[in-house]
Amino acid sequence: MDILFGTAGVPRNAPDRSTLAGLDALSLLDLDCMEIEFVQRVSMGAETAAKVRQEANARGIALSVHAPYYINLNAHEENIRLASRKRLKEAARVGALCGATDIVFHPGFYLGDSAKVAFKTIRQELLSVTRELVEEQVGAMLRAETTGKPSQFGSLEEILNLAQTVLGVGICIDFSHLHARSPYQMQDEFVRDLERVRIALGHSALEQLHVHVSGMHYTKKGERNHLNLGDSDFPYLLLLQALKSEHAGGRLICESPNLEKDALLLKKRWKALAVAESVPN
Image (cartoon, rainbow, N blue to C red; front, side, top):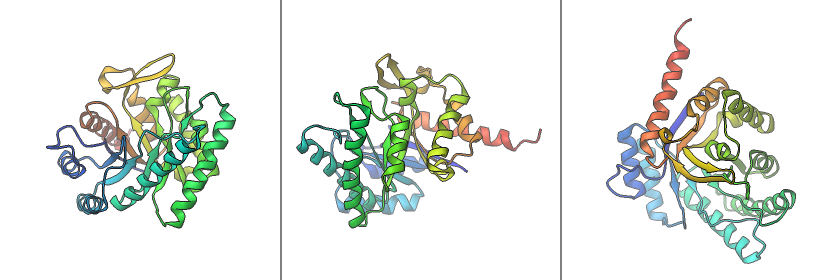
């Protein structure tokens, strides 16, 4: 299997911050995919979405979407959960109009609840969202993302459990977030987590991964902020080697501050591994 490499949002070298300009920049860089970032709100209309879809198809660039960060499906207030469901559904609708196949989202916070109670609430909210999206024939997959702080719902086990129990929900593994929770030291530790995916969801899930990678500044409390790979201790080469050894495929989205520079670095290292693998012993 192969992996597509791209950026979380518009590359830094694009002439402006529009998604259309980002697609043009990605094509010139020879990158393969982009995650459209609806950080605060879903700000794209249907007409622009149609243009994005057309341009992405013409350039052969695969699209996904990150739903707004203001989503907490475990909120104690019903109006906040309602607003969270609305934001997630709107991201899926507009994403589908763009041709995006995957909608990444942060499920929520514990807010003093036990992990069991939070899981039950978030699962119930997602069942409501996916039911409505199916009725509307919105085909994009929702992907719950691993999070970087113990106060946030989103351990690997939790998102795997959501994907196992809610049809239409998959996973987004942010390995840098997991690194902030419990730093990776060896390739075997990446392999262990990829094997957990295979056991829970089958090998097809490994062939269709959606992965986030960046450098990471973290403390005992977890994630602080993203860094460039060269300024961090995230062992990205070990991750790439683990992905290769487990025959993983899908998309790798770079979230480093320098975006396309680290995305190109990761793609270069991935191709070097493929060349090394093809050389006879």
